[in-house]
Length: 190
Image (cartoon, rainbow, N blue to C red):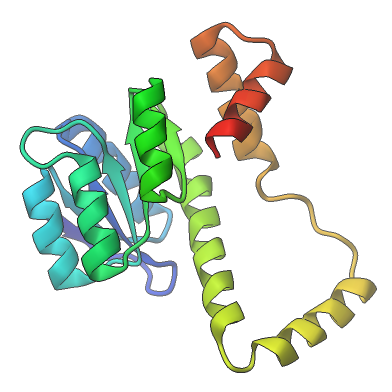
């Protein structure tokens, strides 16, 4: 278990993986990207750390000894209301169905490197903050102001373009699919 303090403001992430090399790589990479990282190498410690540190997001391996990532996700959702993403080498239909049923924000298929994960984590935080802003009492006024600004401002580049392209490439490679079929498979999983 380790807690890596980073620049405040980017967000607090709980990273859980029983492969210590993967855990260290993810934790270091996310901390370098400016996230406050808490890590655990098993589900039991993950739940204890989540209760103590209240991360804003959890990145969970699925298959671990003891409590699985599914067990941890269910606890985080039901008891702590902490959103989560999965990172796993498994992508069979039963696993994907369970991921969807649990309500994960994203599912990343290993092997991945930190350069691929950081943008997905950043996007998850953006989604969470957008939801929180939409739920605030001032949201209608802010949305009206934002829509007026959107009419006057040029459209920025899509921040998901590169991560989506990387994900499509991974699915193409892993399943020997053409680009269109790989993109369709990702859409079904999303």
